Image (cartoon, rainbow, N blue to C red; front, top):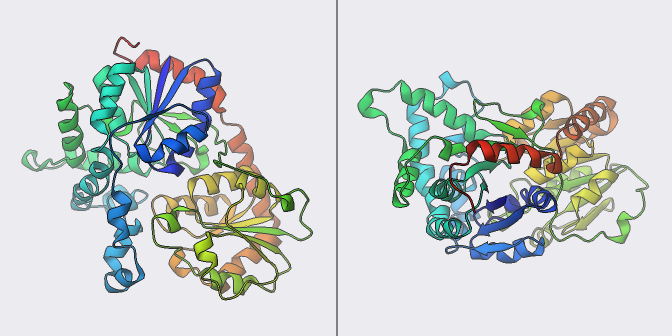
Length: 435
């Protein structure tokens, strides 16, 4: 069968798709990846076939004007929204439904549709539909914000699925929204997401259906104990690390002489959001007298801001986490998808410093599981980080729980094993003639 992966030009979101894409290739299926031109080189470096569509979005160019220390000081609430710290309607996805108002959900969608979804999808949707009509995919697998994917699938009668890079705050929010929508007076049943998607599908001779919002089904890479359950259909798949271009440094060839701790705060914070949400200097200073080797993976721009680097700290701009984490006794992370899962897959206890999107509810789930501790980013002083880290290193229960979590992850179907499930689901959902 022909499988078309599609994502707006966001490198880390695409990286989450690579292992499944290659599993489909090695099973004998045709695979192509459609995205905006800015992502073309990233796609081709994975060995996959790229299809540039449309024009590049300007989401980050627009956001960068507001993601500055000066703007943050003058407009703290607006700054939080721009960073995604507060992201209505999704930031209350984990709250009881009766505690979230209809007005909050409706207004959240009214803002996120033009402020995110339209901005990233409108430049690519027409071209993506045209390519789908030309190539006739049997299955379209799309990144959860790339609604151009299901729209194109609808236009050609292909099966379509989201591949999640988070616990499903999007599906839970949609579920809660629809329940409250049905309770509104008929004249007040406003659905901004459906109206926008429906307007796009009509351009291509199709009609809106609810599956366009969250897929015929979704590919879920978190184990059951950490998921945010919804009434949607899921296909579980084991997380497989993919680091992009990766080189193993020589210092990683040997086991560390002291307990190794990884401090990693991701790439998005510096690439898109104006810097880390915590004080790295404060953390390094607080950990300076511990008998550990602290490996801090920091962007070079952030390294230059440091006034001191303690003797027990090794600074690196990048190292493949799939190679580093097996050597670690604990990790301090931002709860990013790849970082969190690579750490968990290696049974390493985590101190999480969550800030945005699904990170806070995911961090709470990890702490409840017993495989880590959490401190919200705005409360993460150096001394608190130090106290939490000492517990992770000294209390064996955290490593025992982390081992259970790893075993749960390893018991999930691998991408290769999921291929057969996808073949069956395509037969169930595809309505077009295919190629």
